[in-house]
Image 1: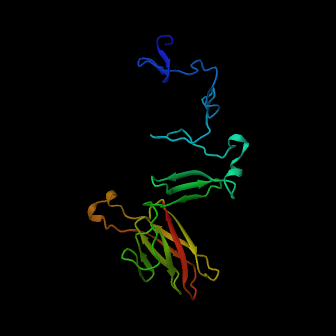
Image 2: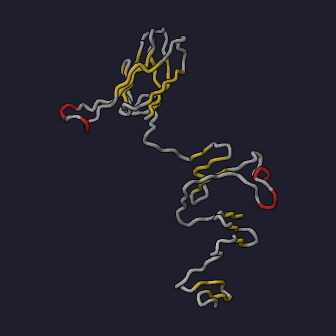
Image 3: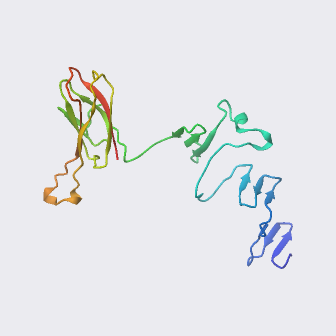
Length: 226
């Protein structure tokens, strides 16, 4: 027993229940465990040679992942195969399957991406998106549309159009050098902001078109961003 609070025996070094076991409490030096396998310097920086398994939550004010030299003088480029760099971050499920990863080039992989802000309309007509003349009514935030030949504009109605909406259109067929652009937009009517008797639940809309007609259809992609 040391100082009546620390016990050293065959089980190791332990502090009594009413005390705390402290290492380098003076703060004048670091801590080296297992011949450099775990090192803590006087600034609190921690270097771990092996893997780190955390049973609870991991939190940090900021997180930076980078490749550095490996023990024994080898580098990550020498040990990670043909690319020279492996994944900086990998998230696996309990079966060992990769759910997400980010490599050293910044490319990211996700097994599944789900969001309520991006809903892509299919090319075929669906119950939630129908084409009637120069007007499309849809519940999507992205999709493909066609401006018919000899028409100067087409209206796309969507409940996701707001005052702050950004709308992008990209032609995917010839425009005969005509500029396809967003001519106008109107935000969706919010029932919570007006009297119930005046609310028609009318979705917002935007108009895409050209200044002069051409004799062929113009196909384009559109994307609503809030």
